[in-house]
Image (spheres, rainbow, N blue to C red):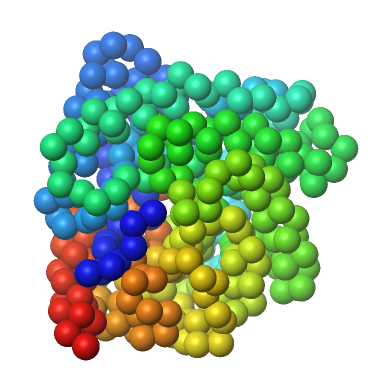
Length: 383
């Protein structure tokens, strides 16, 4: 994994807005959107374009925007065996019963509609069957890199704990046994991404949102829950060198008050137990910007990198490059400039068709990210 050795490198959290023609295919055909040859060519062209666009905007460590997936998590419906459609799963609105929903019931009732995505239920031993779709995404990204002026490439994959939440268990004797079975199956996807020459990014918003969604739990309860899930993830990552792995956690696409977000200080030690070379997290939105100070009291292990969000999905305001630079410099002052890569709080289109932040605003934010990194680099390397 490259480091910021002579300037601050830039990256983001993974999912990016899809072009309208790609969205039309997903809306029409769902997970089978790109199975036909013509649609497959359309996907390949779109990946080539988003790689080019990221490079034009000055993003150094790029991905495919997760264009081959209907969302950062539901894509797994087509990649794991041992499941069937969950007939008991109706529309889901996890926010309505969350800590946030209890504090702001009117707001969440009017702004957070129930999700109607297909959920699965585990009814047999879990296997990995997503090889063809994964290879398609790998091949498209490799082809798109031809001539691209970037520093490095990552590919996101969902964590076992998020699959555990998305797909109900009706087979394994315990949730711990279930999440470890998921981890063992997902190991194949994780290892294939690294074998292809990409950095693996594990997306794990549930690690910190579990506390919000489950108001019946205490911080200590959530820490115990998280320890088991981190052990399961490390089980899946056991054959991959940590420097090939980025770990991303966040509080999801929740453009709300967020007064109940779990605080970084209450979970940071557990996050650092994950076998990763870099840790990506929210640090730009107003509920978490102050948490850069946590790293004054928490020692970043040798060889590790922080990827703090310095632009946010939680506001349509485009951050000023000078503010982006200030955020970068704060982290560099605490953990060292070569241990910081500038990132984003979260993805900008976690589900195909997400409309929280208009694509034109996303690209303006990315420009502010790269401009801010240049300003920070001038300051940090002038010292």
